[in-house]
Image (tube, rainbow, N blue to C red):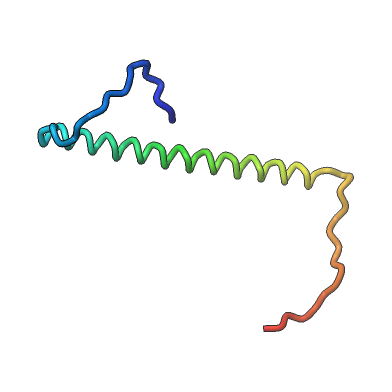
Length: 77
């Protein structure tokens, strides 16, 4: 989610705000942070889905042979 407004950003001196201004400023900051986190999570989920789709489509390729077991060994715990 990117800022699509054409208005320039204004620097705000937090110390000069009253209690309502500080509340709005902090709420907006929290909302922006949450939106950025959600956007990052959605981007990551979309890339995982795309990679999974490509892997699935690659498995449907008739030129690829099935996996074969080369060697089996007992597990040593």
